[in-house]
Amino acid sequence: MTPTQIAYLTFSLILLLALVIDLGLISKKNTTISIKAALLQTLFWVSLSFGFCVFLWFDESPLVATKFFTAYLMEWSLSVDNIFVFILIFTYFKVEQNDAARALLIGILLAIVFRIVFIALGIELINRFHWILYLFGVFLVYTGYMLFFKKDEAEFNPGETKIYKWITRIFRITLIEPNGRYFVNVHGKLFFTNLAVVVLMLAAVDVAFALDSIPTVVSLVRERASDPFTPQDIMVIYSSNVFAVLGLRSLFFLLKGAVDQFDYLQQGIAIVLMFIGVKMLIEYFGIHIDIIISLIVILVCLAGSIVYSMKKPRKKSVSTEL
Image 1 (cartoon, one colour):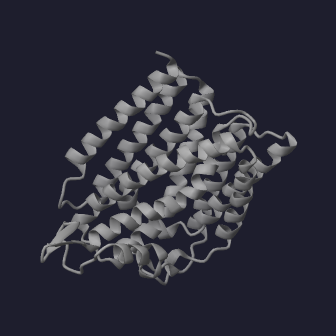
Image 2 (cartoon, one colour):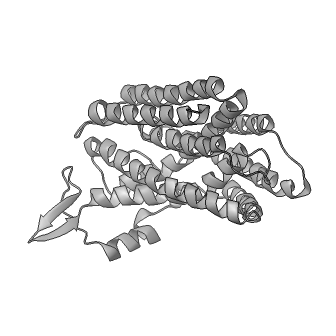
Image 3 (cartoon, one colour):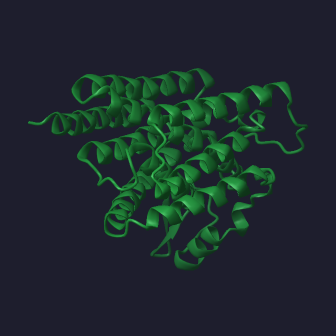
């Protein structure tokens, strides 16, 4: 077996074992996730990710490991930006705390399936139409600019979104108390409960966020825009996405009471998105930015936005209590 095949196999085994542990021991039905448990679970997923990074360092090369770490850090930071929206969804639908962990896990697993499909389509499009990278670059610059000046996520109303309206138009929805159920039988007809609606909305929202993150990671892992995707590149894209998304659930419970303290994190992420968009565009002129420089920019922007958030907090007017 080649080193890359060994890496794929190792990633698959780690992922399978972690899911068995998570589903069987950590996220049992009707359990409430405490801050301590959320911290331990977050450390569990982060340790797995770092362990896989170390494995890539020796199995593949330091460059591949650096690409994975950079892509994972970017995905992880974008995941933090998702959490506020997730909190509002859970609050709007009045999800009980003992149902939240399992619903979030199922939503995230659905999101992973959708992301894999999106990544495969994105890679195929880039391989066939190289110029689409420059469209992605423009899109990231625009998205970063809009995110930098965007108002607080508190304006987000799950009940008014197109996603929710589409779900209620396609499926039969009941307001019966779910009690941990995703479907109920009413007079011989199958109805979705609010818990099932929440799962679908979580997956859909994550896919919407992936429209930013996937082009971002693609730009980070490729040496040059004109280079074809290598098996190592594809492995890094998939594994960094999956590890970051799987760790989102425990991060949600860890940060649900503090996520609104990072007032300027979205500005830090916005600067990173604009930087990567520009990085993709200047490839047209033969200008290449090394992965180490990209990593430094990401670290400085994220750390700087978090420190600035702690030193210059905004006044809060909306509660985000789950």
